[in-house]
Length: 480
Ligand code: SF4
Image (spheres, helix red, strand yellow):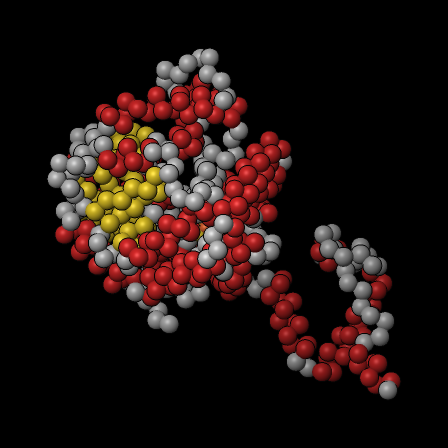
């Protein structure tokens, strides 16, 4: 395997964007766990999505072959990413679009803000996009006097509620419909005071609030699920039709896309368009799949920009084990099956990328020391690996990052000292035999280890101390 990277790999800069939380995972998770309403909302939502997804996956007899194909295409993309990105740039440019390269969040925010300002508009409509959340684009636009308007229903709920998204696919998964009604009544201009919490009524309220905004705003910002290198075609899949409005009505369309989203050909796209809806929303196909190739005169946006975002991705790519995380198609299946996510919720992860994929992607984008608790936010049960439509071995990555974190520690930890002592002892037979004899003394500590002196008594709070056998194998052997 080659060790390809796009230049000098650098991690995502501090002080901009939403890849780092304010506190470590255990502290944030403890707060979520104390909120019974949040846990009820999460359990209900993840159970429903899991069941829907399992039903449609069961209908696809070639699901495992599709997963294999998806994994193989992504591995191929990563092995020749620079070449594919240059091919994509040439194709988009040929089709009348403009390509911008952004090394990090600061550069991407500057490029997009300048492009929006150049249209003369003080407002930009937005399609749901993880990349723009990652870089903190809304804050950058607001600082420049431009109002970003989220048009995805769940993103709108998050924006009006001055909240943070907590799920890749369903950003307001932590809210139930009564809470959403309250947010709309409080924050949505012109809303009917008699609004009920019926989902159809809530959706209708959002629709009428957004309709005029779609028609009046000359510039939109989107992400992209995929980009086809051979033709320069960009693709957005969504369920509400708000994306289609943003991608077709405004004069100017700016797309911010992580560099890993490129696929070589249309044939490759076919694989992902089968995998993504079944794994994410539990649908056979997406209600809206929008694709555009540069500019079509007299039809749709006449200024088309593509911002290719690195922001730490080259650093991930440079790690031959870690680069698997770049295969992610953001379906969120791993979140919906994760017992840790289901209980702790998305905010506990700090980053915009929550759940199992967040636990392996965020620490790599930022450098593991800035998200050091996330690789430990897992029981390593492997449910995420089984659910992932592109077969990302998330448990392997978690262990890889834990090792990287331990290696990055300058001071030896209690664990590393214990492991070094154990390795030395096992390497010396006489010492090992003496240690086994000494181990019998731990019987004095009682079956649960409560009689151990500090700090070992702390270790025994959450674990039972295994009882050493009355006779070791060596003793048994010597007797015979
Ligand atoms: S890691 Fe796999 S399961 Fe999780 S969001 Fe990405 S593609 Fe989906």
